[in-house]
Image 1 (cartoon, rainbow, N blue to C red):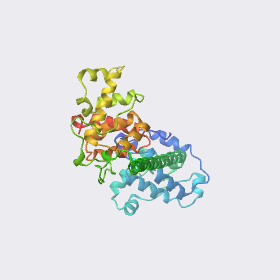
Image 2: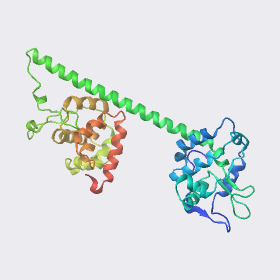
Image 3: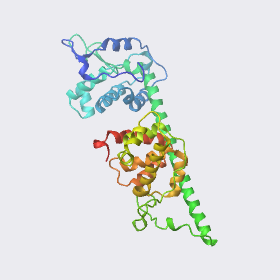
Image 4: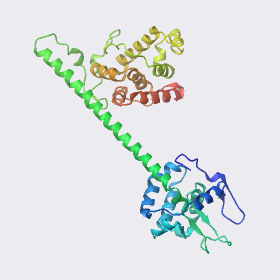
Length: 357
């Protein structure tokens, strides 16, 4: 067994007359037990820690109660020498486990059944079908035999957490760089004005601080007039064919701005440059009339992310539940892995009821 073993659910259990229900893989479970002869440098506390952190990765169908019961069973191993010798039988009854968890005995039986089905314990019964007689009890050797898997799962989870931290740091760095670009642009405009040159800050005077959109939304008093575009021209950049195809396939806003001939061409294997330019023009129009992102911010985002930035525009206007497209777009543009983000969002838009918000 390894990190990606399939799990066994209670529906696959079968009963032996006079005994508790057993899994179809009960023979494999016994083989796992017989193959364990002991492990060194292991304590009850360390095993409890591994189970708490990593068992959900190995057996995602386990309930919270099942995991709690397993931890309680492990805590009944009082002697550290038991892990080295492999004598890992414990004898708490269902009533005792029910008292410790605050549940009833029926729930405890289901939890034990689920643990055995997923190869974490073996319920040992005597000839009289009792767990408290002779060599009967609950055998924890399956847990000990799978400690290597638990360690691998714990390392896997730690790597995911570390990757998430690195992505968050990269996004914070991106935000700081974007803010620095905005400050530089504002300082440059101020210098031009003081030197007596032509005042080019007029298009920026209509921007106001709007909560949730990080000072990116243009006020209604100075919105672009019909036929006038307020955002910068989209420069020539390498076409990302996959992102382009997903945009055309998923975005209803984009589809409405393209002709039938352009749609057919864009859905084909080789898109013409004219159709690609039509998509770029549609994105520019959407950015101008529906979002009104600051030109300086858009230029930085476009230079960094290319077609992924253009796809983010369509996601902001088409994603269901987005109330502030400008703020939503700005948050996406700060992502260090924007291409993966827009791919996921475009597929989500395609699956929305009615195809769009």
